[in-house]
Length: 576
Image (cartoon, rainbow, N blue to C red):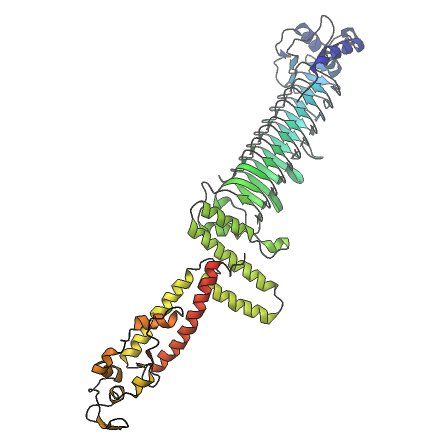
């Protein structure tokens, strides 16, 4: 900020040419005291120096007289280099410094102003109104080398600082500012170092939209009730420090739409009550530091972070908005610090969004963002769980958009199969789990069939051989065979045909049956263990019908799961 301070002497000379001390004589008692101590450089205390409750003649000072001194006075009655410093005065009339250039401090602490001071388009050094009571302040387009101080002041009206430029701070710590006709503090496009509202009460809210802060906006412990919905409008704010709303009590909306905060956005312990509207509207905001929502923070209304960018999130589940009051679409953030870092908790967090309320059916990006953060933080399993839920909800939304009932039914079946077998492509290893399950089920089925003798060679030559045929006949029985004529049966009492055949010397060269390898050979089409070529279930034997049906079922399932596994690992079945 560059101000022309070389004009200070010219302003003093101009003031002297249009007003002289004699023009104010006879001076009031308080004015006599101020003149007497004009060059001391100390704060002139009128009476006990405290804020006067009524117009005491001993403290009454005319605003025109103060203006004369503030603008430089006259020869022999120049203010000290520290400026005009008065405490405990009752100031009558209007202190009008519009478009004036004042190169000394203006210190009017603990003073009562009958009318609103006007410093519109003025160029000043610093303005001290700490502890004063005034009906407002008109200081649009003000330029100050230092700051404006209203610490502990009582203002029954608005403070207007639109387009003002301050080299220092705007300090309103502990002030009580009330304006029932609109905003209590107006600082649109204000340029300032810090805006300090710690412990202040702003009845009517504050408008700092488009303001540029070299450091912080600090409203810790402030009470900001709005009269018409907007409590704190800081849209398009450029803050090179932090925005601190710690333990503030806000009635109305806090708007930070499109703002840029180089530090933190601290809402620890903040209570915002704007039910039915937005509690904190920070869409498209950029917060390079951390976003704090913890310490018994309470939001009655929507937390809108659509398109926002946050460095890290420090939150507690107890402080999250109610279901339906969270907007996270296109919101990006780097990590969770001191908050829940598990899929179950964060899925509950995301479930507090209701896209239907805003005319949408589903927002996939918040789930993708959460999964990416989980992966970066080393929580891979949690990331997979989030993506599975995302796929389920996204596919459900797609089915809901489908008008054709037949196609919708087919999608339901396909999505169900993909969900069970592959986790919608997000957990392709699920296919291996299912393959293992069917393999073991096949082992049990074929082992049972083997014990029942319901497995037979898969060779026409063997099935016609006497060794196999006679093993189907009990010892002591005779059967006439084409090749050998009358022959005795070979099966011992209680022995099935398969067990009998295995005991023949002629069967020693035939591969042995293994239910483990037979199930694997049936299940995986790309493998050839030699079992399926030599053996097959015999449906005429007990247990054989079950085994042959499972044989066909497992062959189909094997092909399907193998193809799904390949598709899952290649990402072909994912929604995105």
